[in-house]
Image 1 (spheres, rainbow, N blue to C red):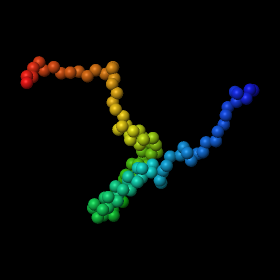
Image 2 (cartoon, rainbow, N blue to C red):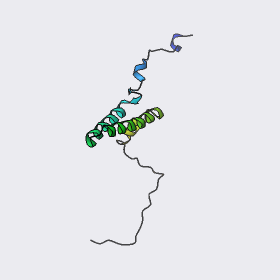
Image 3 (spheres, rainbow, N blue to C red):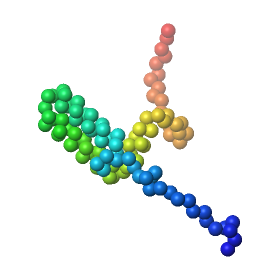
Image 4 (cartoon, rainbow, N blue to C red):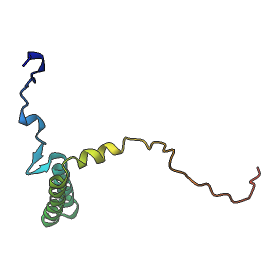
Length: 102
């Protein structure tokens, strides 16, 4: 075989592609659950309320991370995108038949 047709191999480190998680949950969701639990503790003066809220949000975060790890990035980036014009979609205008004068 010719050297020009041989594939080129480059090392890829696993740590570059591994998601950043804390206890199996995306780190941003983990710290969000931790801060909401701490806020509930400060608001209600109840350690039980803080722990229950943290564990509930941690469970939801763990479920969403195991279900689809990229969903958080999709949701965060969707707020910055603008709606695009779709020529196939028709918006109907309702005509009332009245003329509004000045």
